[in-house]
Image (cartoon, rainbow, N blue to C red; front, side, top):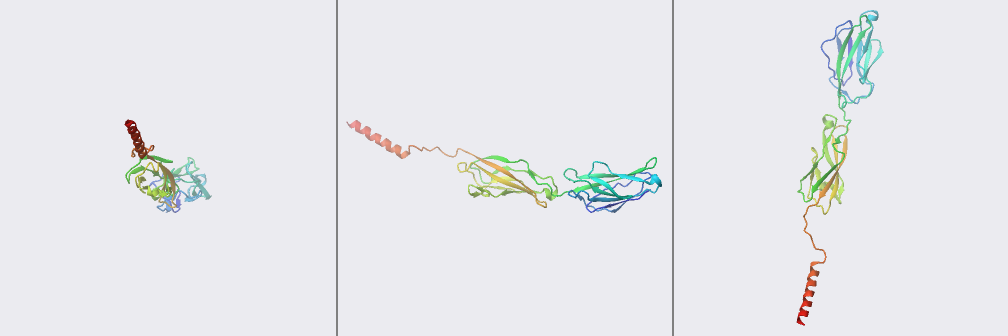
Length: 270
């Protein structure tokens, strides 16, 4: 039989079954140090995850052991010296793509018939704020009728973040700019929690028929990640003005009519 020791680095969350497979290469796997933390997804390639030591008490080829893990995982085993192995990361980790890995350690001797034992543990990745929030659209366009009431809902912008927890807690703000010489915030405001964009005052098509607003979404992670989007607001005309006669002016029309009346009177006298 053989004893096997697994020494885990800080930040590793592992789960072990209670029983091992039977065989020539058997024994209890002893956890020397297991911390109930997770491996951060941004650890560098080559980071040590576990130290494994295995021994088979048989003699000759029966006591020689091959240890391996499945292919296709971003981990590999390094054997710095006989009977000792180091499990290290082999490439970048991405929690958003794969949130946890099941590592199966298989130890097989070279006897005839060969005997083996297996043990597995689960590596869970913890989130880092490596994704910026994204708006559901690359830009927004909306129509709003003029003479709207103050507080009228213009539209709702939405965004999502692939991270977790505080890293995915989003808030919306309006980036300051000017509309016809006035701050854009004097025309619209946004609910920071739900992305609802409201009118601050009534809009007048005859004074302004289009303007745009820059909205920013930020997460609550460290470092803060953010994205911007442009909202185009088109003010729609309403029939709120009566037609006005421009030419001839009413006073000129009155003078013309009076002159015509005098001429007619003179002709009648003759």
